[in-house]
Image (cartoon, rainbow, N blue to C red; front, side, top):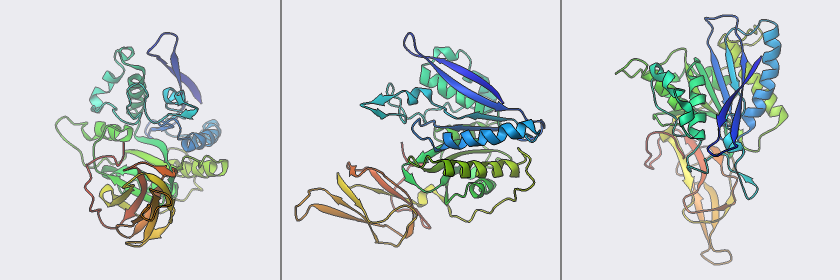
Length: 353
């Protein structure tokens, strides 16, 4: 394993950020190249724990000559966000300087323009340098995995329709309970990678990208940072790498994904109509019927009209839930995966900011 660092100078004197990069050299130049990163949202650590245990296996495999394709791993992809704390609470999702989501505003370029990402990179603010360095590394690979987690959540993934159903092997290997098929070309990391591949041929948009993959994996919830879960997820990711011929392991039979794979339009987002204390009646993993009671928001405690009941718009699987119990008006409370499209209007692209 080769360990190097990308040094990103800070925007004020005396500050710099160090980004460790772990590389495993493959023995077969024809094997797919893989790039995996975690904690782009700096407080989302299940992926960091997974990669800690995966690297342990990869070091052993590399010594045995069992790594076929080059693998690049960035286990903590956002040192800038990891250093942001406000009144004792980590603020790793948004850059406090620009108020931009660390997983948005990645450059939308073609693969042919990859070199421009790091040209005069020191001229850019630190957060922009970070995004350009991460995207540059990813575009050198065939398979790109961005490991995140939700708040309270089942295991699921956002996968561009251009990679489906070929990517069902990843969903099966990681025992995902649902796949959300993305339809937009936002500036999120995994979609910026997909954009570069789709428009690799100038003036043409490729709708299918065989042999490639760029995906956001949601490894359950923020509090699911656990050695047993991390080792199980590392084993699942190892199975995926073996199935794709990136590592050698003849004992690993491919699994079959049996969960729902639905367009983003089929996700019901339950939002708070008013602020207050939220009392949940159902939790993640529950299957609910149409009109079933999901939550009560206590808006004016003790008063006769002091609460609001929220019901399921249609039948579905509760995929995520907020961990907050005091919510503001229009806060997201739940995501429900459904067989039919939601009646709520939705812009193309990511579900949330």
